[in-house]
Image (cartoon, rainbow, N blue to C red):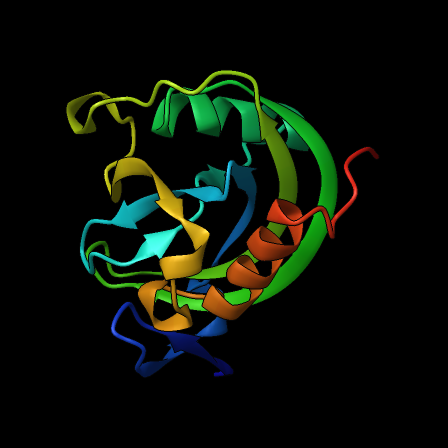
Length: 165
Protein backbone atom coordinates (compact mmCIF):
# COMPACT_ATOMS: atom_id res chain seq x y z
CA UNK A 1 0.00 0.00 0.00
CA UNK A 2 1.39 3.38 -1.03
CA UNK A 3 1.25 6.29 1.44
CA UNK A 4 1.58 10.07 1.25
CA UNK A 5 2.97 12.42 3.88
CA UNK A 6 0.32 14.97 4.91
CA UNK A 7 0.64 18.03 7.14
CA UNK A 8 -1.76 18.29 10.10
CA UNK A 9 -3.33 21.44 11.56
CA UNK A 10 -0.65 21.63 14.25
CA UNK A 11 2.15 21.29 11.68
CA UNK A 12 2.99 17.65 12.30
CA UNK A 13 3.34 15.06 9.58
CA UNK A 14 0.99 12.13 9.18
CA UNK A 15 1.28 9.26 6.73
CA UNK A 16 -1.98 8.51 4.89
CA UNK A 17 -2.73 5.76 2.34
CA UNK A 18 -3.04 7.30 -1.13
CA UNK A 19 -6.42 5.69 -1.74
CA UNK A 20 -7.89 7.62 1.22
CA UNK A 21 -6.96 11.06 -0.17
CA UNK A 22 -9.74 13.35 -1.39
CA UNK A 23 -8.83 15.54 -4.37
CA UNK A 24 -9.72 19.13 -3.48
CA UNK A 25 -9.17 21.93 -5.96
CA UNK A 26 -9.56 25.24 -4.15
CA UNK A 27 -9.26 28.94 -4.88
CA UNK A 28 -8.17 31.74 -2.55
CA UNK A 29 -8.23 35.54 -2.75
CA UNK A 30 -5.48 38.01 -1.97
CA UNK A 31 -7.53 41.16 -1.32
CA UNK A 32 -5.66 44.30 -0.29
CA UNK A 33 -7.08 47.77 0.35
CA UNK A 34 -5.46 50.81 2.00
CA UNK A 35 -2.56 48.80 3.44
CA UNK A 36 -4.80 46.08 4.87
CA UNK A 37 -5.33 42.51 3.71
CA UNK A 38 -8.60 40.61 4.04
CA UNK A 39 -8.11 37.51 6.19
CA UNK A 40 -10.08 34.85 8.03
CA UNK A 41 -9.22 32.95 11.20
CA UNK A 42 -9.10 29.16 11.07
CA UNK A 43 -11.31 28.24 14.04
CA UNK A 44 -9.41 25.14 15.26
CA UNK A 45 -6.06 27.02 15.44
CA UNK A 46 -6.86 30.76 15.49
CA UNK A 47 -4.37 31.38 12.69
CA UNK A 48 -4.99 33.52 9.62
CA UNK A 49 -5.69 32.37 6.08
CA UNK A 50 -7.03 34.14 3.01
CA UNK A 51 -10.72 33.74 2.18
CA UNK A 52 -11.58 31.05 -0.33
CA UNK A 53 -12.36 27.38 -0.56
CA UNK A 54 -13.31 24.42 -2.65
CA UNK A 55 -14.26 24.59 -6.30
CA UNK A 56 -17.43 22.62 -7.05
CA UNK A 57 -17.60 20.24 -9.99
CA UNK A 58 -18.71 22.20 -13.04
CA UNK A 59 -18.03 25.56 -11.37
CA UNK A 60 -15.65 28.00 -13.03
CA UNK A 61 -12.71 29.11 -10.89
CA UNK A 62 -13.71 32.79 -10.91
CA UNK A 63 -17.29 31.92 -10.00
CA UNK A 64 -16.07 29.73 -7.12
CA UNK A 65 -13.86 32.52 -5.82
CA UNK A 66 -16.64 35.11 -5.92
CA UNK A 67 -19.05 32.67 -4.23
CA UNK A 68 -16.55 31.84 -1.48
CA UNK A 69 -15.90 35.55 -0.80
CA UNK A 70 -19.64 36.23 -0.48
CA UNK A 71 -20.15 33.20 1.82
CA UNK A 72 -17.13 33.80 4.04
CA UNK A 73 -16.78 37.59 4.11
CA UNK A 74 -19.91 39.13 2.57
CA UNK A 75 -17.99 41.28 0.11
CA UNK A 76 -18.00 41.39 -3.67
CA UNK A 77 -14.69 41.36 -5.52
CA UNK A 78 -13.36 41.83 -9.01
CA UNK A 79 -11.02 38.95 -9.76
CA UNK A 80 -7.98 40.60 -11.32
CA UNK A 81 -5.42 37.88 -12.03
CA UNK A 82 -3.90 34.55 -11.09
CA UNK A 83 -0.79 34.98 -8.90
CA UNK A 84 0.21 31.64 -7.36
CA UNK A 85 -0.37 27.88 -7.32
CA UNK A 86 0.55 25.32 -4.70
CA UNK A 87 -0.03 21.61 -4.30
CA UNK A 88 -0.52 20.52 -0.70
CA UNK A 89 -1.23 17.23 1.04
CA UNK A 90 -3.00 17.96 4.31
CA UNK A 91 -4.87 16.12 7.02
CA UNK A 92 -7.84 17.99 8.47
CA UNK A 93 -7.91 16.74 12.05
CA UNK A 94 -11.51 17.69 13.00
CA UNK A 95 -13.01 15.51 10.25
CA UNK A 96 -10.22 12.94 9.98
CA UNK A 97 -10.04 13.57 6.23
CA UNK A 98 -6.85 13.71 4.16
CA UNK A 99 -6.74 15.96 1.10
CA UNK A 100 -4.67 16.33 -2.02
CA UNK A 101 -5.10 20.08 -2.36
CA UNK A 102 -4.62 22.04 -5.55
CA UNK A 103 -4.63 25.66 -4.38
CA UNK A 104 -5.01 28.57 -6.81
CA UNK A 105 -4.45 32.13 -5.55
CA UNK A 106 -5.88 35.20 -7.27
CA UNK A 107 -5.34 38.88 -6.72
CA UNK A 108 -8.72 40.55 -6.22
CA UNK A 109 -9.99 44.09 -5.87
CA UNK A 110 -12.78 44.72 -3.36
CA UNK A 111 -15.97 46.21 -4.81
CA UNK A 112 -17.71 46.31 -1.41
CA UNK A 113 -16.24 46.52 2.10
CA UNK A 114 -18.83 45.60 4.75
CA UNK A 115 -17.86 42.27 6.31
CA UNK A 116 -20.15 39.61 7.72
CA UNK A 117 -20.52 39.06 11.45
CA UNK A 118 -19.09 35.72 12.61
CA UNK A 119 -22.56 34.19 12.95
CA UNK A 120 -23.25 34.92 9.26
CA UNK A 121 -20.08 33.25 7.91
CA UNK A 122 -21.00 30.14 5.90
CA UNK A 123 -17.93 28.06 6.74
CA UNK A 124 -17.63 25.51 9.52
CA UNK A 125 -13.85 25.93 9.83
CA UNK A 126 -13.38 29.68 9.34
CA UNK A 127 -14.59 32.81 11.05
CA UNK A 128 -13.78 36.39 11.92
CA UNK A 129 -13.39 37.96 8.47
CA UNK A 130 -11.32 41.08 9.01
CA UNK A 131 -9.14 43.71 7.40
CA UNK A 132 -5.69 43.33 8.97
CA UNK A 133 -2.80 45.82 8.56
CA UNK A 134 -0.18 44.05 6.45
CA UNK A 135 2.75 45.69 8.23
CA UNK A 136 1.90 44.07 11.58
CA UNK A 137 1.74 40.51 10.24
CA UNK A 138 4.41 37.82 10.43
CA UNK A 139 4.63 34.48 8.63
CA UNK A 140 3.87 32.52 11.81
CA UNK A 141 0.51 34.32 12.10
CA UNK A 142 -0.75 32.17 9.19
CA UNK A 143 -1.95 28.58 9.15
CA UNK A 144 0.09 27.93 6.01
CA UNK A 145 1.86 29.80 3.22
CA UNK A 146 2.41 32.90 5.41
CA UNK A 147 5.54 33.97 3.57
CA UNK A 148 3.83 33.73 0.18
CA UNK A 149 0.61 35.46 1.29
CA UNK A 150 2.53 38.30 2.95
CA UNK A 151 4.79 38.74 -0.07
CA UNK A 152 1.81 38.89 -2.45
CA UNK A 153 -0.11 41.21 -0.11
CA UNK A 154 2.82 43.60 0.33
CA UNK A 155 3.57 43.70 -3.40
CA UNK A 156 -0.09 44.36 -4.14
CA UNK A 157 -0.29 47.10 -1.50
CA UNK A 158 2.68 48.97 -2.94
CA UNK A 159 1.71 48.45 -6.58
CA UNK A 160 4.28 45.72 -7.22
CA UNK A 161 1.66 43.37 -8.66
CA UNK A 162 -0.02 45.07 -11.59
CA UNK A 163 -3.77 44.55 -11.85
CA UNK A 164 -5.39 43.23 -14.98
CA UNK A 165 -5.33 39.81 -16.58
